[in-house]
Length: 379
Image 1: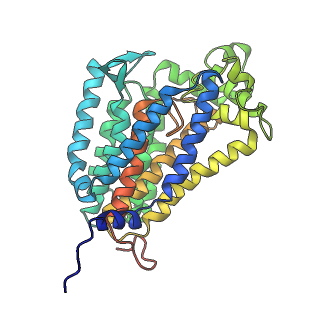
Image 2 (image 1 turned 120 degrees about the horizontal axis):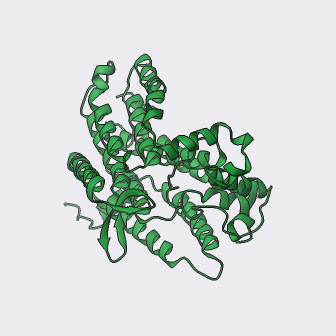
Image 3 (image 1 turned 120 degrees about the vertical axis):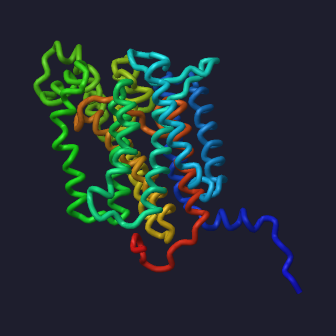
C-alpha cells in the first residue's frame, strides 16, 4: 500500500533544515534599530518610512529564502554582471546627492543603490567559483576571483564610496581561506593590501586624505579641526563617552536631541545607541550582532556542499565586516568613512540587501543535508 503524498512535506523539510536561529537575532537587532530611528526622528514622529523599509526587507528575505539553492547557483553569474552594468551606469548617469554619485533614480522618490546589491552578487559568484574548482594551490589560482572582487570595488571607489568598496575584499579573503588556500598563500594575499596602502592613499580625494590625517591625530584636535574635518569623529566620541554605564535614556541623548551628531540616522547611528542606552545597552547590541555573524559562520561548517558552506559563511562575514567598519569608525578605530549598519541604519537598498542576505542563507541551508559529524570544511 503506497503512502499518500503530504502536500506540506516540502515546507516542513524547509523549516526543519534551515538555519532559523538567525531570524530571532536579526529581528531583535531590527527592533533596536527601530527604537533608535524613532529616537532620532523625535518621540512624537514615528518613523513610518523605516517600518516600511523593514517590511520590504522581510518580504525580500522571504522571497530569497523561497528560491531554491540550485536557482541561486545558476543566477550567480547573471546577477554579478547585471550589478557590474548598473555600477557602470551609475558612474555616468547616476543621481548625485551630497557630492556622491551612487544612486539610480526610479521615480516617486525611490532610489536604487547598485553597490549594495553588488555585495550579494559578489558573494554568490565567488561562492560558485570556489565551489566549482579544486582547492587553490597558489596565488595564480586566486587571480580570477581577485579580479571578480576588484572590478566592483574599482567601479564603486570613484562614486566616491570608500566604505562600501572596503566590504568587498574581506568576503573574498574569507572564502579563499575556507576554500583551503594554503596558509602561506593566504597570508601573502592578506599582506597585499598593506603593501598597496601607500598607493591607495595617493588615489584618495582631498577630503578623504584630510579625514585620515584627522584620525591619525584625533587626540590632539584643535578647535578648528573639531568644527571642520573632525566634526563627525569628535561628536561621535562625545556621544559614546557621555552614555556612561546605563545611558541618558531613550530620546534623551544630548548629542542626539541637539542635532550635533551628523548622519545619526545612518552611518553614525551606533553613537546614539551608546549615548542613550549606555555601555550595557551598546554591549548587548554588539553581542547580538556578533552572535548573528558567528552563528552563520558556525552553521556553515555543518554542510557538505561547498556552495552552501561558502554562501552561509559569506553572509556571516558580510554582517561582521559592516559591524567592524561602522562601529570602528564611530569609535575612532578607523578613519571616517560612510557605511550603513545593516538592519539598523536608514536606507532602503541596504535594508533590502540585509533581508536578502538572511533569506539567501536560509535558502541554501534548507536545501542541503547537514554534515552528521565534525567534517567542517574537509570535503
